[in-house]
Amino acid sequence: MTSNSATQPNFQKLAKPYCQADDRKSWGQIANTLIPLLFMIVAAYWAQQFSFLATVPFLIVGGLLITRTFIIMHDCGHGSFFKDKKTRDIVGVITGIICFTPYRQWTREHAAHHQHSGDLDFRGRGDVWTLTFDEYQNASWLEKLQYYLYRHPIVTFGIGPIFIFQFRHRMTLKTDRALEKNNVYFTNLALVVLYGTLSYFLGFKNVMMVHLPMTIVAQLVGCLLFYVQHQYEETYWAQGEKWSYNTAALEGCSYLKLPKVLQWFTGNIGFHHIHHLNHKIPNYNLEKCYRENGVFQTADTLTLGDMLPCIGLKIFDESGGKMLTWAQVRKKQKALSLVSARV
Image 1 (cartoon, rainbow, N blue to C red):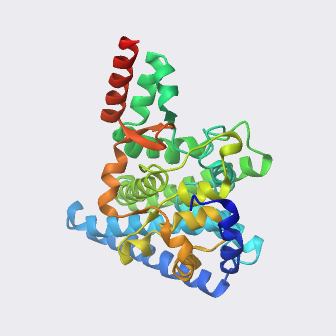
Image 2: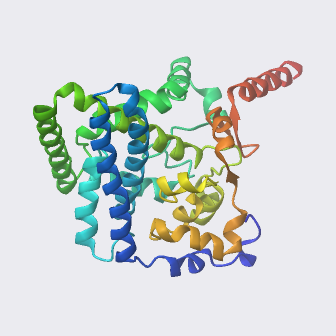
């Protein structure tokens, strides 16, 4: 895909036929996601009478279904799930409440991520904080410590998601417009009413023992997905005129090839390179677009076994065009020190 642009196919033209939303498929996806989710919640409450361990299978499946619910909200935000905007927004707000996410605020932030993915000049909104090797070399010890802590798995996949979805999304931002602020307030109010009512009838502890683990499972899975879809060894970062939207999509986003059952739970988001190329493609059309266009099958392909190594990648090396582990960073630093000493 890095061949001369004159010889490349028109990627956007290839993707466009798959942008058509199918309301029947969309409602079917809502039904086969939210009905099983409700069943898992009820089953988890029922299993509590035996032990917490008895609830674990229902909590895990429920968490995966919340992940799938998030993808529905995500598609509504991209304007790709229903033909009618009002329907998309209503479904987006409702699914956002289920996922502890203010739909309109998150949609705007996520749009910035799509617009500038892989662009070194526009980092900081809706992405994973990434420094280049030179930036890290020139950073102060405090900045390096902050970056190290941010990139630590406990923070990246544990503290971070909980902070963002349980606390940060409860607040408005200076950049929020009135519609987004009102949506934050409405989401917060809906959560208070929903969980307050459940706690009144079922007990606060019982509610927390069901919904908190489900939510944490969903956030962990979602965070892992987002991370490996952009943070892999041969990913793409560029700046200025060297940056290209199409290249950022096809070379800066992986194809995460998952087992079919996990592909279903994650709403086909593994076809992330195609999603970034054209976010108007509904998730139920992504696989078809992939299968019917060989040019999209040459993307960097990751599997479950590749996820753990990706977590170890921390710094982008502009000279080598790839992500480095801390060990590789130290090795390069040592090599540069030896060269400097000889000079």
